[in-house]
Amino acid sequence: MSVIALHGIRGGTGTTSVTAALAWALSQLGEKVLAIDLSAANLLRLHFAMPYDSPRGWATAERAGSGWEHGAMRYNSRLDFLPFGQLSGAEEGLVSCDWQNNLTKLRNTNVYDWILLDVPVGEPLRAAQAISMADHALILLQADSQSHVRLHQQPLPVNCHYLVNQFAPVSQLQQDILLLWQQTLPQLLPFTLHRDEAMAESLAGKQPVGELHPQSKSSQDIITLANWCLINLRSMPK
Image (cartoon, rainbow, N blue to C red; front, side):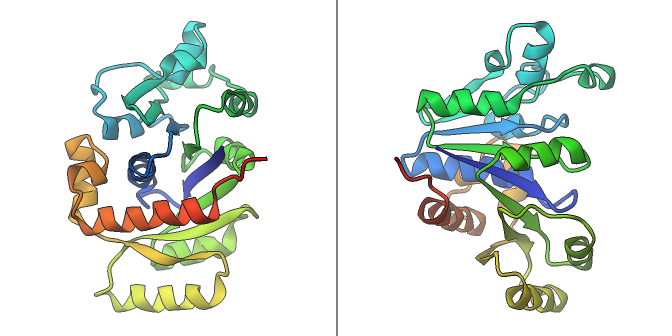
């Protein structure tokens, strides 16, 4: 089993949409996947047709004393997801969960081939803990000046790969920044995820982009990412 943390270098990089899309793509390639939302924003669930007003999630289950696993939901036979849950701001500060131990338990079940962690932006401690527990981290970038500056002014995990999302090839600035990163970031993935209205529509449609718009450019890009993960990030059986 491989644990992959997906984390945006800043807000607005599309991490949650990519997490949902990658989970779907891996499941369509025959893999068993669990996607876990570690962000109190609780948005990952909305890509999996969960009712907006449902409070269910691992944090609400922990708060109720029933155990984090009771927050899990099934999307299809190969894809499960674990929402954060709906809590008030005061309640969020009272919830603690030993995810290192939880991931160990999940590994021991041998149920899943992949666990994808949707890691929050703006919660540095929770983000650092999540990334440290993962086998690999995918750091999502946009080819813009803000992402470039952040690459040089904040610590980044050693086990990370960089993935450019929402790339617009018509932008000369984005082309220039991408070329610079290709020359200076050795862990930059050799492809980009392009800006595409289909990805934006996935949240509105409450489906992963590959299910909602299977022929879109975004869906094809995500399939490329899923196959790259299978080749490069899959844990080999002992």
